Image (cartoon, rainbow, N blue to C red; front, side):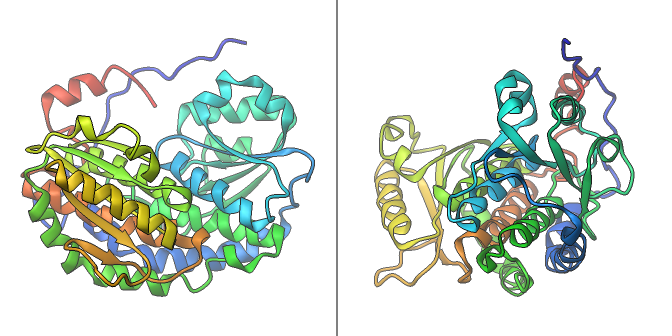
Length: 366
């Protein structure tokens, strides 16, 4: 059956704030409490959800920010099961393009904050038609996505007031990791107590605000992240696009060293990196030094204390690799927020207060 695409929509963005603090700011700061509540609820609810069959692929499905949550959880599923469980993150549209994935799947964790994303619902229909059991991670009590799922993990305190989603990302990752712990028994993926390092990075907002001033003249950004940081780099890029209206790409750390330097414009480019291991940090440092030599402004977020820490190099709290996406995204959320304000933008509305952007957005549904 041919897939029907969603009809064009008349978006209704959250125009309720006209200055700092915009809704996005409160959502970012609410994450420690929301993640704590979500983990507590997910620990209770996950007990009733049976594990996936070990001889079939476990899919992680979503769109946009929800797909980045899916990628973070899919990466964590490797160490959770010591790589004995086949797993793949796939966005909802790609799942419709690859029907063979449905035949190989034994279960799926589907991410949809609102429960109303049309192509995710189409992917759920395809999963159901193939007999694939679904666990939905969502922030709503009632939606078409809930009606399509076999089990539901509900995030808590995660209802977004801004269109640039923040708390719905971290709570979705936290709920999924709690489920992975319930299924695998591996404590390294359990986010219980993660609100403490989250609170630390939220308290450090004064560090991220001057960085926004340092980078405000840059129109092109490249965010680097590999391994556990790959989902963070993708989600960070999306926040800077949506909130601050910068042109942003993401890439792996080593990928950068294989041909990106010729594209650096010394007057426009910023290269930012996040690293979660000593090896990752060494290569990220090399990449950023090369970018700086080419004229880019650079910054690094990493763990461990080097002997020669550079300017704009920030230490992140020590957590297990699987939990890093919950913590590492926060500086980028604040960066997107303060970059938006430095450019006179409302970060809540994704540019839809601009008639040009609004006209384009009216052409499609999501």
